[in-house]
Length: 420
Image 1 (tube, rainbow, N blue to C red):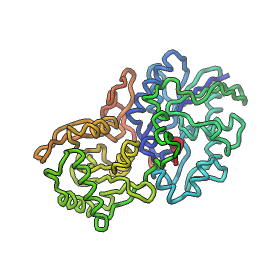
Image 2: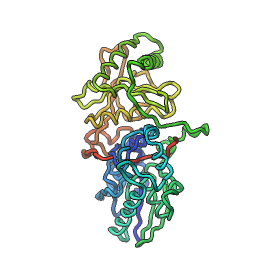
Image 3: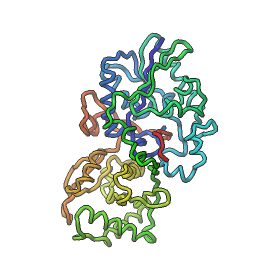
Image 4: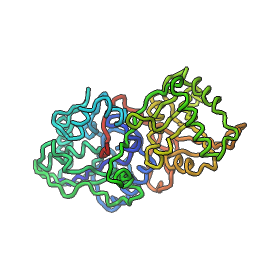
C-alpha cells in the first residue's frame, strides 16, 4: 500500500486577481508564502519518501515546504497540471461571463459537455490525474509520498475515487489553498483517508476565509471585474472626476490638483497603446480605473502605474486587487519584472493595501508638488520559498533568491468557488 498526500498549491495570482490560470505560469502571492510556511510546519514530523508536483511555478514553489526541509528531490510531471483552459487563459472570469456565458455555465456545473476552447475537458483532466496517482503509487510501493497539484485537478480526481460522475463533482467540495487530502492506494483500490483539510491555516491566511465578504447580506454581488480601454474622448469626464475624487480623498482639498494635466498625460500614454487607461467594469458599469505608463523606465524592466482607482461605492469589497492583476497581465508578457507606482506616505489605507500585496518603498519622488513614495512589486520568476523564511512579507522572496523560472507559453484554470 502507498500513502499519498495530495496538496493544492498555495494562493497564487489567479486566485487573488480573479483571473483564469491553469497552465498559465502564475506566481504565489504574499499570503501564499505564509500558507507554505504553515504547510511546512504541518509536515515537519511526517515522514515522506518522495515529493511530486506539477511542473508549474506555483506548485513547485509550494512543494518547497515538503522536499526542502527533508532534503528530498522534487519530481515534476505535467500530468499533475490544472485543467488546460485554452483560449480562456489569463482572461478574467468577469470577461468570460460576458463573452462565453453558456460555456462558463457548463464549467460551473461540472457538465460532461464542457470543454475549454482549444483546451481540456473535465473527462480528459480526470483521466490524466487518475493515471498520475496510480503511476506514483506504482513507483513507490509501501512508501509515503506527497503530490502538489491544483484545485480543479484535485477535485476531478477525488470525484473519480468517490465513484461519482463528473456532474456531481462539486458535491465533493473545493479545497483551500495548501489544503491536504490523503489517499491509500493498494493495487487498483483507492481509499480516501481524508480530504480538503486546511486545519494548518488560521483564518488570517486562509484564502477561503478571506472570500466571504460577498455572502454577508445573503445577496451575491459580482466579484469578477472585466476590463476595457477607456475612451478618453467620450469618457474624459469620468477620468477627470476620478482623478479629482482620488486627490481630495488623499489630500483633503483640491490644492495643487491639475486635472487637465493628468488628462493630457493619460492621452499621451494612450497614443502609444490603447490599453494605457483601462476601465474596470462590474457588469455594465465602470467600477474603477487602472492607468499604465509603457514608456517610463521601460529599459529597467519597469511597468509603471500612474493611477489606480476604485469608485467609493466599490471600495472595501476586495475588488481593488484585480486592478493590479490587470497590470501584471499586461506587463509580464512585455518582459517587465517590476510594477512601480507612487503613493502618498500619509495615505495609510493605500499604503497598507500596496504593502499587503507585495509593494515595497524603494525611494521618494523628487520635485513633486506633494510628498510621494516610490513603491515597487517584483513580478518576475526569480523567487522561491526557503525553510525558515518566516511569515514576514518579503522574507525569502527577494529577486535572485531562487532559481530562474521560464514562464510557460501555454495557458488554463485555477478557480476558487465563483460568487457570480
